[in-house]
Image 1: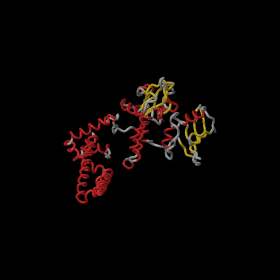
Image 2: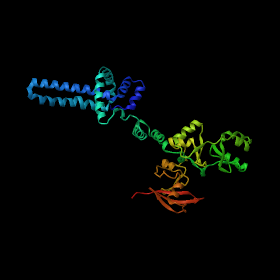
Image 3: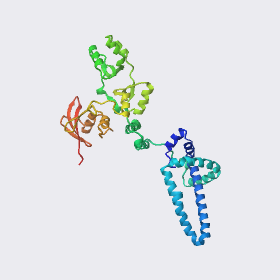
Image 4: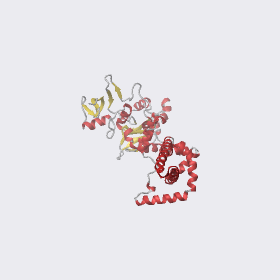
Length: 390
């Protein structure tokens, strides 16, 4: 009964005969327990009867008490505590060989076990209990998290973090990882052609959105690899640029990451445009953004844990207002609130209820923040220092 059920099923699938028999027995624990208790009680009662007879023959009626005491000590040490402790510590070494004995005994004594279990179930039913309603072995998400977290050396720590991140995907939405609209770098086809060519040549991204005048008038998603040949031979034209673009793929805001990961796979896409219920563009989400939530940062700037964070000599941190709060928590091991705004700018503005002026200071949890720069109704840079608890 103390066997690890998941290790047992793994061994059974791998072809271990003893594990297969044990797994079969444990599918009906009521029958197995009935068989074990039947044999256990039969042997104990028989031992007590024999002890009584032997004690009376040796010492008469006065020897019965001594015989009972001796039998109790013997049974406790050799039939209860010692074997059961050993079995609890090494269940597989006991369970697998025992399964070869229990299985045929269960077949032979099946009718008697069925009768005993029938009476037991009837009594349980009278008390409002049902064996069929007993909990199964399925684990909830939080229980599975505990199993992974307590795996210890069986699973490398990095792999543990990845597994836990996969379990968390359902609780994270595309809003948490998307590139916000204000940071989207796209190509406006109504710009001067020389400016468009310069942006294509200097773009840091492989995929960029094409639009006219406004991002709300998005035309498609351009993979720069498709036009690199024409660009190198100076054959690239506005028409060719537009024809090389793929129709945009729209993602509703609030979509859980596990759902969006499957949608990307199903639609054979790597790039989505996040829109709200009115169809207004809120940001961009990529397959890399989702994978980064699972495996962590793919790359980082030399000497920095997070490219949005610059460490000062005095131990404070100068952070970009557009920095994603989840990224800051993950890379800096901070604990900024993430149940509201997604960026540091949004967190500061929501906390103060207004666009702050440079020099304003505030405390959020254990972090002291000083506004360094604001522009265009946003907080551009913030100095953060870790507060020492009183």
